[in-house]
Amino acid sequence: MAQPVAFITGITGQDGSYLAELLLRQGYLVHGLVRRASMFNRSRIEHLRHDPAVYGKSLFLHYGDLQDATALRRIFRQVRPSEVYHLAGQSHVGLSFEIPEVTCHEVGNATLGLLEILRDQDYPVRFYHAASSEIFGTPESSPQNEETPTRPGNPYGCAKAFAVHLCRVYRKAYGLFVCNGIAYNHESPRRGENFVTRKISLAAARIKLGLQDKLNLGDLDVRRDWGYAPEYVEGMWRMLQQPEPDDYVLATGQSHSIRDFLSAAFARVALDWRSHVIFEERFVRPTEVNGLVGDPSKAKARLGWEPKTRMAELAGIMVDADLEAQRPGA
Image (tube, rainbow, N blue to C red; front, side, top):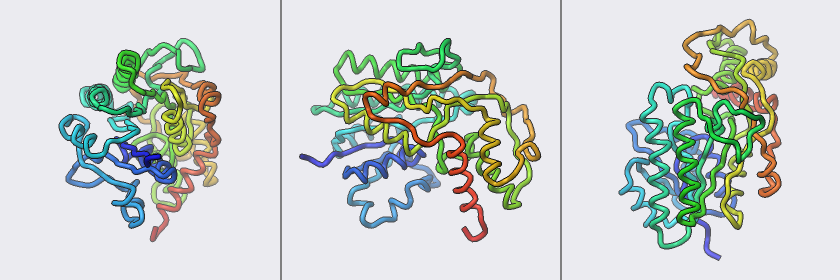
């Protein structure tokens, strides 16, 4: 049996780095797309790049851009991936209000471009599209499942909903093996510092170490279904191992507020968050979605996937990692 070959867009991101590690453990040849920039942002995969047993042997990086179809087609010809994991794109909901056109191009049009490339291949390729709970916006029912209607409430959600429906169209019209992974919020120590969970965990660690005193946040009543990213990438991989393509919700099925996450994170370092958090209007989004909690029963039944790490434990994992990273000499 031929060695499986995976191509990951967004390999330098949180999910991409964990997925690369998983696929390497599974014996894949892993190729990743990296955007060329004046300053490299490869910190999440540097440990793999510096491993002589891995880099250049089972892990390969290719410079390119989601908007450059010519370069992407060239990579496909060279690599001939058996599985494609499309994780790249502007993924910050709040930022999508500031740069909606960029968000729609990177999230929506880029997915269309990849689907067109897949349609032109002379061999079967399995495609994973990283969808998001943001496609549901403010849903009429809770929890949401794969059949819940899309009602996005922000530009990012709109772009993701467009991409989700495109994937379904190409799956039905052209028989492509395309899966939408409708993932609810999933966090880790590798989460970007502009995301609220990492902002909280980093602040808790820095306040404990005396490196800062205050944390500015917006609406603390916003609720999300938070899981642990390394577990979610396993769900992504499992989708592409099924005999038939389909869509799956990846979620914990539990809803928590930002206030809950604050409490768990600061409790980890024996601090009262109320002594350090300051409300700041500029962090309140023009529109906010609420009621997002996923039903992962289909993923459990068909993929054998279910989350193990709950919110309080997740907050602790993130705070512990930030404590270690922020200590003098780290």
